[in-house]
Image 1: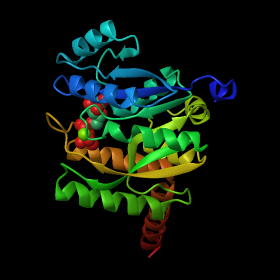
Image 2: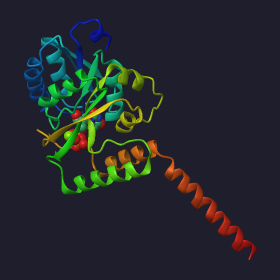
Image 3: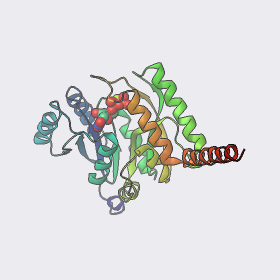
Image 4: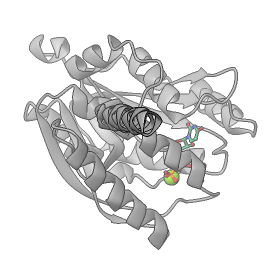
Length: 256
Ligand code: UDP
Ligand code: MG
């Protein structure tokens, strides 16, 4: 924002958390370069966050950084999970806005100019809204739909339906996220929680280019439970009520 006010070219950080994506990173970089090369009057940094990869992903990124001054990277000492990798990207992004996207090309880089358009219109959170979910099983599509409906019904905070991590956040949204103390972070919940002016941009999510998803059933279930419990105390209240009820029943049966 400050850059915008000074009348300089705005800088955008494209932030990519990755874990064992050696076959995808060069293809992603190539497509990113073509896209950002076509966006006039803006500067870009490409911020890669290595979430403890055990394959050659980090070597690929190091080689890219050696040849392209726009490329920066962070590297974790082990695999901490995507939410923490995203948090590190938020902490280290230097841009007037940061665009978050996956490394497997499920998030088409060609949407970036549309996201930036939203930033110029004054939106703080320009999020890609999945119109279709390419490369995902019928089971995942169904459970994702269910998740968003349960989430939307269990909280008064407005939920952005079918929105994932592919989005652009303004400098002030990033500043607020940096100040949030949560350690167990569910980023999608936090994006909704912080509020601000939000704009949806429809996207057709593509199938993963190479490899398999890192989120198996139990990891997704954990993420969904984190999402719901980070938004609402309803499960906690339900547990309290059930606890009180069973205590009352126990007491009554004891008296009887
Ligand atoms: N990822 C990560 N850390 C992990 C798991 C995944 O940084 O522990 C990255 C992964 O490399 C990709 C993004 O998060 O860039 C989304 O992961 P994936 O494609 O496996 O998830 P899905 O698209 O199936 O939900
Ligand atoms: Mg993926």
